[in-house]
Length: 218
Image 1 (cartoon, rainbow, N blue to C red):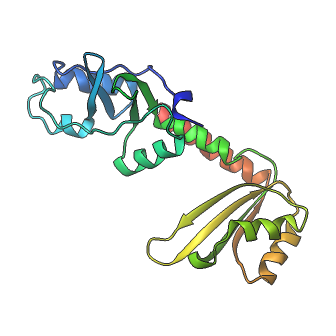
Image 2 (cartoon, rainbow, N blue to C red):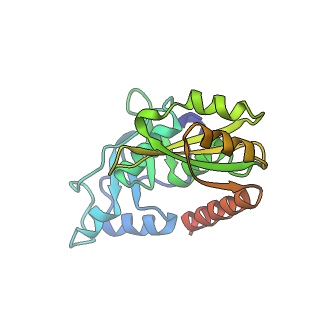
């Protein structure tokens, strides 16, 4: 799950001498809101649709417009790309080597697809959502309780609540019959916020994921 496994060159790059109009047309054609700007094989930064729209004369060259300097190295993990894309609201991220030479880019849709696979979205089983104080969170303890009922955790995702000290833990498990697991959680004072039985819910998640991927491709 490293960036080097997702590098693409399907989206072209810009040159400092390209005009605002040319850049906007390229973004529209390739359905992105950012494009890398290159000079002599080196990545200078990301041009955003927002920066282009703020320019009153679309015949001007993009040289001099504000660039986002976000970029990745090939050996970084795909999760780092997700965090950076979310923080900076990026549709793609350039990938460079240690010398700053442009190697290609990773698109948001490819990163999301990789994340979905790590979370076993389409696997048969069940999903349980627990809510607890952040201080009480221990994946080792949660795993011990689940496995004591002969069930395995396929994936786990932690979601923090910025307005409180509570967290949600979403567990994907390998069995549909998890009544014993739920009873164990309740016996140990875990709050079971929700649970869903797959494959029905897994199919629903898969449909939502596919719809989102279709949206990214339009």
